Amino acid sequence: MPDQSEQPEKPFTVRAISERIGAIVDGLSEVWIEGELSEINVRPGSPTIFMRLRDTSADMSISVRCFKNVFDSVAPLETNARVVIRSKPTWWTKNGSLSFNISEIRQVGVGELMARLEALKNLLASEGLFDLDRKRALPFLPNVVGLICGRNSDAGNDVVENAKRRWPSVKFEIREVAVANAAAVSEVSEALSELEANPDVDVIIITRGGGSFEDLLPFSDESLLRLVANCKTPIISAIGHEKDSPLLDLVADWRASTPTDAGKRVVPDMEEELANISNLQDRANRFLQNLMTFEASKIKGFMERQIMREPQTIVTTRVEIITGLIARSHRSMTSRIAIAAEEISGLRTQVRTLSPQATLDRGYSVVQKSDGSVLRKASEVKPGEKLRLRLAQGEVGAITE
Image: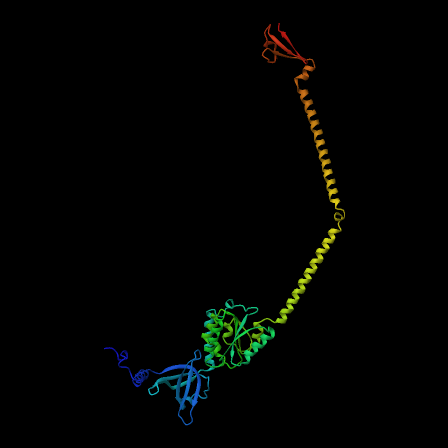
């Protein structure tokens, strides 16, 4: 059989569906809920106090109520107080609303909040969200400065005024949001996402004035901190005064001690930059003047040299050098020829001395056989053998006896 809710011909009545929801809600047990009291409605003569409990990281709230004696047990409770309640959900069938009946309230103290922040700080530090190497450098002169501040806040005005004093033409894209209540986290996060998506925004400043520890808690919210860490645009944190230190200061790319400091840091000082430009121009002019003077003195020194006064000197000097080299070449060649001639003469004398001709010139002769061999022994010839006698001048024939 199909369920009645699936048959359009047999719909539930409003009362029936409300009673059915009430039956489900009544079956739920008590739960502990943490939040911030955004409203406290005390009605004269009524034993019941009505309140709204808001989530500090989201723009939502629930209706809660308790008896006066439960409320007085932790009094005084004021708006924006952070509490933990023990409550059971109740469904009001008649008007179709959900409420929570409080049986116990505990106020979250500063000590506990600081302990939670310290634990969150250690967690984010272990993930590297505070590391210096992940922080982005601020632009020298941003095209547009994104500014997130409170509505009509002095902090936002301080940033704008101090920035314009330094650079009058600076442009701002301002988002005024809640910075001091439970809606701060959601509104600041939404504004940050919007400015991050704007390609003209080169740097974003998140600022608010000083306040109590509880007032600055939204700027230590984990969801906001992780959003800031994931931004590609450099972020400047300017929350409170020098002594205030929300965790946003550690995640942001640069921490300003005050909103005024942020306005001075985000843009350069125009007067200082103009002075620097003037100094650079003076230095450039002095450098060029000194360079021109130095080069002129070098040219003057060149012009005063003798070679410039008498250009032919370089030719005559080279001619003298070449003439000297030619003379040296001639002397060297003559000397070498003379030495070689003496060597040849000496060799000629040696050859002549050792030559057989010299012996013949002294009256000796060389006796040769008919075959041309030199006769050295008398026994080597036979009687009647023809011989040839070679004299100093000519030859004669002979026959042995």
